[in-house]
Image 1 (cartoon, rainbow, N blue to C red):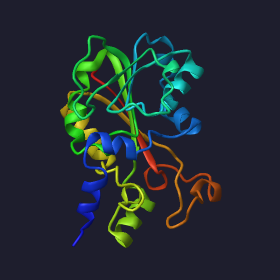
Image 2: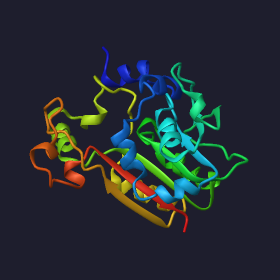
Image 3: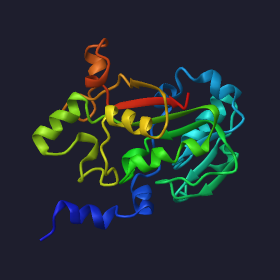
Length: 232
């Protein structure tokens, strides 16, 4: 008899299969604008930016157009639609524990990435070796602590962004508070968390809280969270 675990193991059991199942897409321009909010100055003056899990390269294209900066891209697979022209370089790497590179980066992005790892704690511990002095790490992830996600857990036994039927590649829900703890364990001392302030109403296909009540903000009403961290 097949179990939910059997389905996951057959469709997204390796880093490569999870990367392909993710379709290499992490958001769109409004999402990317939120991801860079508050660190525009750091991006504009950075000489080395790293885009981990760059997928199709949409975020790199955004950085190139918005800031005239071409990041370095790392991913476990090269997606067929990858737009390398927006990148200073691209390399295939195991992202679950990223090996140190010769280049240190002023800004490192992990946009919608940690949920695909069986051990996000190990991933975060690998980040300091990639970071330049005074540099910043920016990561985003689905928010398991939103009202929509919590209600999905009660009703279906699954967080809304981690349902096997619709997103088998996302295998590890990380609570915002746990992401902060993991970064502290990795040596980060300055850690700021915020929320997308964009969230879907539970059990609807696309209705947003903010279209109904614009002032709803924060953890309960946001589908994603972001952390900006530095080593101090």
